[in-house]
Image (cartoon, rainbow, N blue to C red; front, side, top):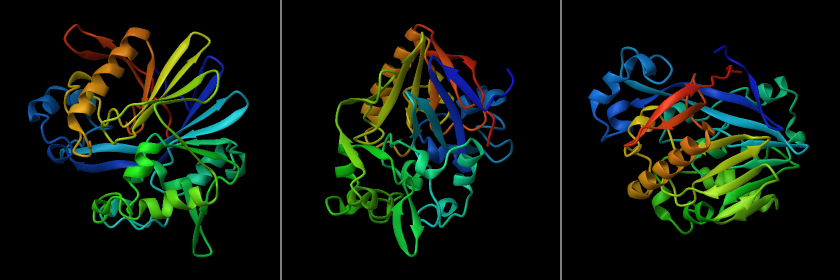
Length: 301
């Protein structure tokens, strides 16, 4: 299949906006209980987009799904962001990337965005919520409502959770969440939230307490914007294996199997947050697990 920059699902158009991509962690650290044999068995599928050819590094993308639905411009997740102090992840520390330029290439200015959906509040999903202006963090999208899961808003607040200090989410609440809340642009939700007639947010806990997904149903098409349900295609064939960042491993496994089963049963296209290169896929139920049925690759911007 030829790469496309945009697909249409019913009455919704979907565009992939990639902030960055490349190696992030060694496979045995990122997925500590996923056997090396699994990586070798699927090497032809994984290299080079999802696994380094020579260094066993997992490759991922930081990206946003841009949706145009019901006359509104919607962003699902906002990447790492610029100028953010991320001492725990050198590759994310004080970046200077042209994310807003990539949005401009598809005709989206910051003031055009109506809705921002943060599927969860990890550092690599909220970074462009804000930008640095005259030494202060301000909302990047001044006219947008930001939908955030209440459970994550409470969990990642360092006032209530001192364990955030020193981890991958250090500084994130202060520079990418609190300023938007202070501006009155945050809407917190629980369990589920209807975005419009075609899009619905649903809780998908495990990776974080408030992790969520967006389901699309329009004109006979269905899709699952899966957040961090998957970090590698191997989690389709090995759904019981989590990344090292999953807060509740047992709940993550249950949620992943449930949503993969739903996608297989409905024929929904799955669009995870981090798959590099091949970035959307359909799955099928094999009776005792799942397999990749087909890919729907997107052009990188």
